[in-house]
Length: 373
Image (cartoon, rainbow, N blue to C red; front, side):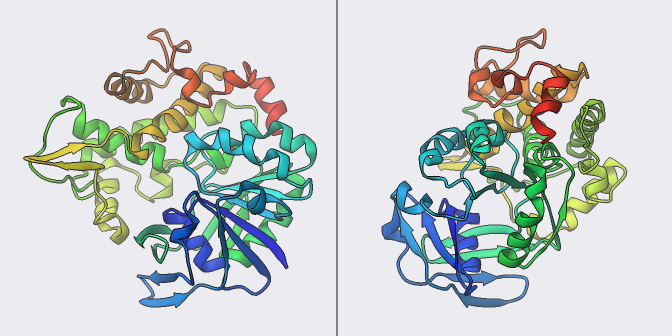
């Protein structure tokens, strides 16, 4: 049996444990800071298929050595801002033949893995998570819906990608397509654009402490201005991709991904997606209403490890990103950060990102050297 370790017992981690532990050819471990919450079997509620099933056996542990030692596959679901320390913690215990995957891959985690790659470890990533996941009862009940029909994956080194695909298709029971370069799985029309475009439109005229009378439903509130904003951001991202000296053909625009060529069509599309319907802007209840939770991963992950990564790449190839700049600047003001100066150079908060320049990648040629392996 192959040992599979899932890192993080949150939404997606809980679903992965529930799904993979049911397969007889995997010995599943869950690395979590609170293993006492994960006792007995889990229940997985698949909303769209209207079925509930029980997980297989698994071991929950807070010991990094027990979780990682002799693991064949390690699946990291931690938020981007925790991945640097996590990679450092697991490095002594990863065997050279093992594979370390990030779900999803955006955020630059592969940049922390230089020593692991040198030792022989394969790094892989998914462009998107396998399904929408929501914990219904901590440690006990996982909810999932919008299961993907296809996943896009790549690895470093790329020659190991077929081994990774075989594992993923077996473990997740979802077909995988290979992207030709790992960088293509880190830039995607996903959360870094989706979460920031709408937030910018909804909140740019408000102060951080403003109280709202009611909870804001994120996609129910989505309008053509939100769609126009995200389309501009997507166009800028694609322009950056086209200027990079690596194969980025696997990166789709937001318009192509959602089959909506115009902002008006995109608004209609978002309103029609069932799994989007109940998603809310991150907010906290206060005495007389709601305040925005700017400590949510909507912002602490999707700006510094999403938009700032695109901006970082744009500086390598000299492609302007005015709308992305505007959104970064808006959030920087709220968070009191300076990721980039007004002239586009690196700001004093850039160390709170995984900008490529922090890893000695200061040109398109150096970027190509890192990813073409």
